[in-house]
Image (cartoon, rainbow, N blue to C red; front, side, top):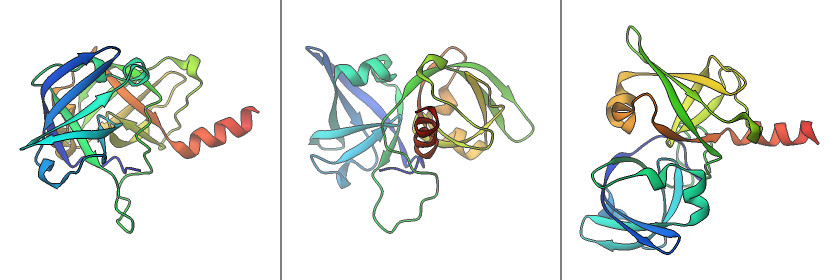
Length: 194
């Protein structure tokens, strides 16, 4: 379980393909606090630490993960949003995030405002995922509030601090991002469609 509050940016140091899987080696500021078998969210994708060496650790993404996320698009030297799992009793500063990406979206617009930046994303509505105005959404692991909710498109307004401390600072129009829709909304949607 995560909160969508990014702890740090990691750097992809190595990518190794093995059959349908890829192994990502990541350098991060909290590697020395990790242990093998621990869960870490990578651009919102919960992956298990399988190896640690010095200030780098390795995780494995399987075919299903690569099919549903942007993890397979990563390259060496890319920055990746990182968050360790919640500790019981901590404040929930973002919202409940499972680390189970529902689908990807394409960044279709970036507009500078006076004090914030509006990012607009388009996603395939065939999956029946929905957003609601002022509801929660996780984009590349970042807990955000939806504005301009439409059938297959939404926007988020991001403050300068979040831009500077996540990989949103590198995001450009046409980039693919990971989406995890609000878990409560997913249950309500499932119950009302049955």
